[in-house]
Image (tube, rainbow, N blue to C red):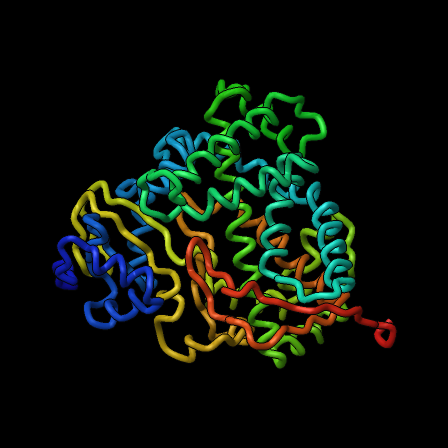
Length: 435
């Protein structure tokens, strides 16, 4: 039998310096994993925190769902709300998750596809006709928000623009210090949160007919006795906006960054994309770019999710003592699963962006870009559909030229994205020779 080991620790007490290092050093966890092993404890602003990496430790954690529960930092808890799925556990979490999950069924995705394709074609026209460089990251953010707000929730026109304006204020403070000093990001976010909930409540008070995918929820809501006017549902929709927006926008921005900075990989991908159908019919859109029909596209998406996952880590809290990779973790400890470090932990060239690895038989990486276990991101299927449609739609129609002399490094909070917005110019692409 493997001898159990005590939990290694950095020795931090207040955790002030650790919190500063965490916010500034992209290799914060990597340095400590190297020194202390795959499971270690530190302190962040008074909060004991256990970091884990590697398939063994993560598998041990997720295989014991009865011994763990969801957890988020205080700022996230307050901004999402006490009714939110993210802050619920047990039966209350499972019931609401089952209901909200209907918004991302195969039938629902087919329903959304036509509008997603329309948004991509509009973006293509914008990029092609713009006389000045376009910040692609911002366009990806607006696209991702439009999909979840307009396509799923049925918000249109000025309502969508107002929602997006408040939503940007709200997301900036999700991982901030939760002190509502006048004029602070957190105080502004609390006010924007109330405006967002008021707007979402007004949507719910309207008839569900022609309101995106919300009509899919009506029957199940009646079954469990959650009225449409309940604050409960408003907070679930607020979480959906975040889950459907932030992760998708981050993944798209990082994918575009990798392709535009590595023309060999872009050319390799275009060799496949040039012979893919665009636009697909809504019914075919959900399957036409799957791994069988577009293996290189699938490899690109997987490698982006490995190299710069939109969720750099996720949290759990222990309800009892656990053993993770041979290390004993006491009860009531917050655990952060370090996905970025785990995805680069192992043998081989894992610090290099190389999508071809996912087409090799020996590749057995277990990726969890949207979290894992019972609390995996509900919107992952929609995000995957948006990403594949966007890549094919843009690269079938456009040549994209990245503007030099900008900062291509990634800011990590709330999700990875290029610091200077990934400025590009677009021009029309002729495929006559392929037809």
